[in-house]
Amino acid sequence: MRRLRSLGIYVLLILVSVVYLFPVVWMVSTSLKTDPQIVRIPPNLIPSPVRWANYGDALRTINFLRAAKNTLYITGMNIIGNILSSSIVAYSFARLRWKGRELLFGIMLSTLMLPFAVTMVPQYLIFRNLGWVNTFKPLWVPAFFGSPFYIFLLRQFMLTLPNSYDDAARIDGCSSFGIYWRIIMPLIKPALTVVAMFTFTTHWNDFLGPLIYLSREELYTFALALQKFQSDYVVNWAQLMAASSVMTLPIIALFFAGQRYFIQGVVMSGIKG
Image (tube, rainbow, N blue to C red):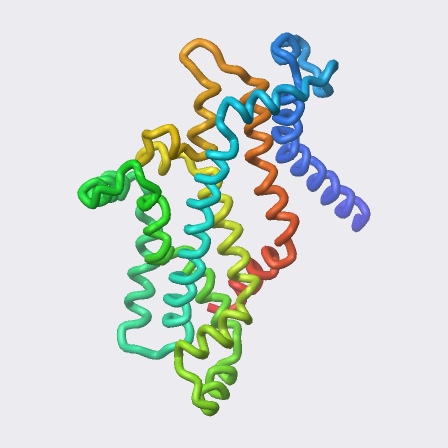
């Protein structure tokens, strides 16, 4: 019975892996095909002949270096903003004692129930009045005001740390900010890695935000640049899949590089409430 249960778990894991990996494999396969191979019935997974020129043509079409620079700038600023602002607010909720803390924490969590569609128009009006349309500011400045989800995640992780660390530091004359910067921040690296990975994935793939605020082609991110392969009548699927494959590589590399911290951060964040 135990062997059958283990076999069932292995089969389930294999099926889940196939379901999630097949679209990636098909994307890479399509990026190496010629136009006749793409519409071939029945479809073939392994292209023959292999057309590597699709990658060069795709990167030239979307101006890869410019799109990469814009996307990296927006993503990097969001990572810095979310890590700094969310960790400071989480430290206040988790380690400091002040009146109304639990009430404000509950109000902050309630904002998670607001969908982006509700706040999209008011945000646009604010940024338009500030003259920030067709600039990168609407896409990274909000990150420096904290994110409720990341604040909650970091707070839960900080609650797992013993309060004796804070007491010992205060005896040595360390201020609240000194405790946050010198003691808490080094100890929550796994949770910060999770925040960085989530932020990177979100803004690296973000399409709606740049679509709303950016209309000049020199400001396009990867997501907007991919639109150049689509028109009303013809879609160059091979080049579109080639550009999408290049765009996906950093996310895969980041996940495998930070997998250990990612798992540790997610697990430890839910231990203590």
